[in-house]
Image 1 (cartoon, rainbow, N blue to C red):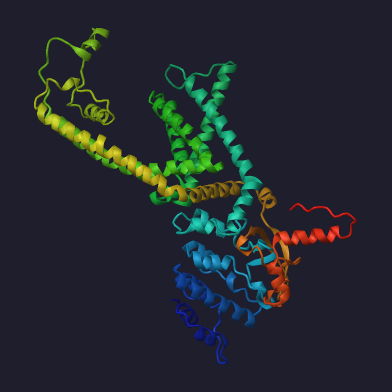
Image 2 (cartoon, one colour):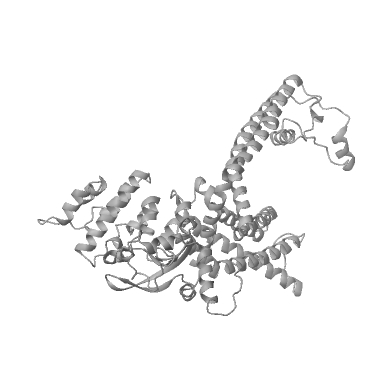
Length: 562
């Protein structure tokens, strides 16, 4: 609960004791006092929040009560800007711990009274019917600052509720603004550069020479182009390797977080490792370099799906593929491998090789006909890799029983084979199809949120690579002077316009040219004749009245089309 009486009283929902401690005439409690963790009373309230409706209600009430009392006693004290020992304000702490209830309250808090308006983080700029234009304070929120709320939420892979928190305003519109300003163009440019890399890599790999590596440099135009392609491919994969290390060091991915954040960063890292291993073998005059090279080439083409994040529909489709691979298919492979190796070991142990016959027949005879000078070695079921491969073929309906005719204990072999086919081909494959169908239905609604999070990660990664001058140019928000009790209060704000059709017939003429100076307490009584008249008017009525005023001054009455 904290090591301070004020924190204990606040966290146990004792508002009277909170008021006494802060306002008594003997010795007032200092709201900026911290415990051994550097937490103030506001930090303590965030820590005891549990996102339940009842808990959130009292946390909000006590939180605002302390803010108002502090503002009345110490008008210039900025209590919410106090950081604890790990550099977190109450807002950042709420984001870090996933306390979505108190987080949304702090982020969207608005006070209408003039003497406490400076405590707001949201300011109503103008309202007309269902259209609301609001200004949100970007301090500690925008990624332009270090250790911002956006940084914490996007890179905090273990934070619960971060999908819902990123969809709140102004975070949702702020990310969309960053995407429109520079994210979309940079992402498309990266995609084009990656396509060029793929074309060069594919051409270089296809035109490999059938000599022992490393290949000699041919002193002509094609030779220089081939060597340049090799060097460009090496530089690109070194970049993927270094970026992969930096990403994993920052995000520290786990299996559960990979289901949400995606695994393309790891795939790019593996791609870089494969190419570097191929390069080392190539320079070491080892022919095995070709195996790593072709695996890197295949993975490079698979990683094109990373750029599906730029499109909503393709991004959601890619999210579904990622979730299926890391959930259903991964579990299926684990169980299937257990069955496959278990039955392979049983078959290898059971079957005894038949005696060697003088004549060659079947596939062995075919091999002997091709090359009669070499001794024909026919694979048998005593070979574990061969047996495993044959059982895998039985799983997909391509099994071959040609070499089992001369073995002993065939009855037991058939029993094992039938049991294996029932467990894998009939049971496991059908279970996989059913689970994948359920996964698609389950994550249909979640896929959009996951896609938005993955795109947000991409936006933040691109922003960190921008030089400072461009980052300052593309900074979101505007500097606004807000009229508050502190005088001229200048903040960097972000404008969000929303339409709420539940309030289409209220606040029809509530427009304030200077945000922050408008006092809701000075509005006319809601039950006054003027307010009732405004609420009773519809949009059609307003347009009709405006048109009648204009046409009454003319000599000709024209029909009104609305």
